[in-house]
Length: 168
Image 1: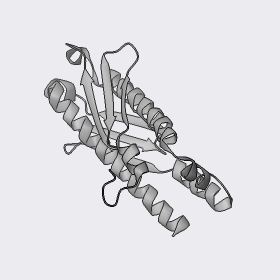
Image 2 (image 1 turned 30 degrees about the vertical axis):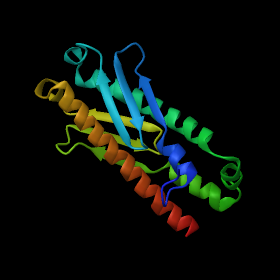
Image 3 (image 1 turned 60 degrees about the vertical axis):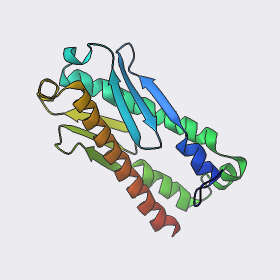
Image 4 (image 1 turned 135 degrees about the vertical axis):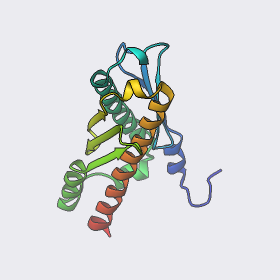
């Protein structure tokens, strides 16, 4: 049953759950409910990582989540929505170009984990030097989750503002 104020499509989108893994590294990321990202490490992996290596793995996981999200979102569209979407005129082209250039930012409250994105395709992670030795695995995962939620929120706020400017 559809909740008040939520379309069937919104419920399908909310139900998307993705899990990705960074190559052979035992580092996984999950995405649920559009903006809830969690990171998990295989047994004993965290203590062998350094900040630069983990930045690369997390950026890769971010790109995999965005690609998976895009694919799952497109699959969730019914025919009526598909027909209404797309590029129909110069305004739509300009909107799509501006959306692809959105620079978004998310950080943990202590800024030990910072995530940036351009159009949500160029995901970059910055981990404060010494953070992995200073904080434990669970706390690091919490800080990453917090930064990812802020990044997604920032991006979506900018998309909504862009939609308002272009489409009223």
